[in-house]
Image 1: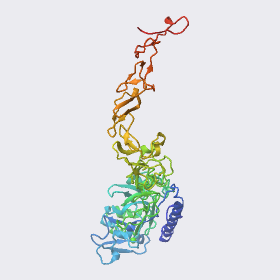
Image 2: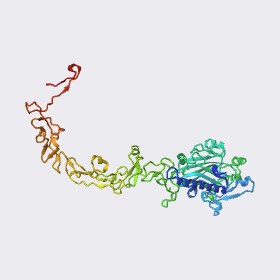
Image 3: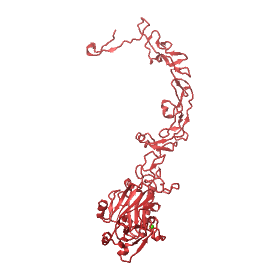
Image 4: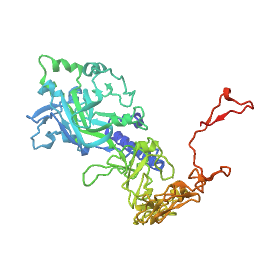
Length: 552
Ligand SMILES: [Ca+2]
């Protein structure tokens, strides 16, 4: 059967060809992915390799652990080739009599063997556990039997914790047994999967032919929807640290069943029914979330760690690297796929992504556009701001100096009495006449260094408010102790009109207006009598103008 069909044939030579084909396919996909990784749109995956040799395996029953157990090969009975029998003895000095579970991952023909039915019918209930020591994405599981046919009824299970197991697939001796043993509708014939994470029950693999050296290939990715470019659902489905084989029943010949399960079982036949596994292969790859093609062993922990691309970091490339959070993280092949560098102008090593900043378009990216939500952390060189684009209070960036300058911020020279210590931070306020570095003055002070009094204040460095009426004072100034009155104004505070003048107003350059009293007097004063527009038809004058009146 062709490897593309998903099921390797029995026999080791074709299997080897299949494995080689898988490796070549993965390598080709990897080269393709690397070449297009610049755009960050293609997911990257590490090679698939056999995880089983690095695992811890255990089982709850093995032949010959309690006492030496005789067994016979079923094939020799069926084909009447003369009984091929042996002894299972876990304590024997003869290694060929020992069949520990570690034999299923040793890469040799040595095998693990379970107890025969002679020990009891419940010896069919055997559980094998494999701890892969870290999480992987498992692509397939291959079982090879030794001196027995394939198991009849069993469950392949996965777990991330080692305690909470979920099924991957059910196997039964017949379609009817799927319903009977597992309460599941069988998937007839060759396994088919309607969804990425469908758990099926199949009798496809539970065959008595061959009676020994059977091989069962269980694909977990191939044949499922999205297998070409695995969906997150599929990747989650194949993720496991622990794998469990719950064996629940051996396959039996119909003609043997009366002698096996009847009232007087035949010991000779009971000894011919047992499980044996020469090798279990677990094809899998590191969990790198579509961001790595390699995952070498880290010397300090012994774990395999992804060599992350796309500016991602972490053992499984599950986050953006510290300075690459302009956009949120996503799996490889998703959007945006690759992580984007924050624009911190060279003044920060880390940033984080902020939804609100992205929505309000407050973060500039490395292309100079307000796209994404990167916020720089721990801005250095006296900088601050979302993109380390501003200077800290007490510092300023002179005109012509770029925010990306290695040392963009200079200390404000604002130590004078009237200065706050801060200065105009950059040239963003040039239009208002504020020059970068000019000191920000306290109330009452003015000047680039705040070393004089502001208009309306006097007596530097005290700079107290002028005791003058602003309306009557020239430019609001006071000279020494006295106020500088406008031309038509008098008084110590410049708060009254000179004789012959009235109506002190701030917008009058002379302060007060000359009286106009037809030469009868030069004394007048402002009137606060109201003037009202009477309006209304009843008071309209004969010429049509609306009347005015002044109350006496
Ligand atoms: Ca082996």
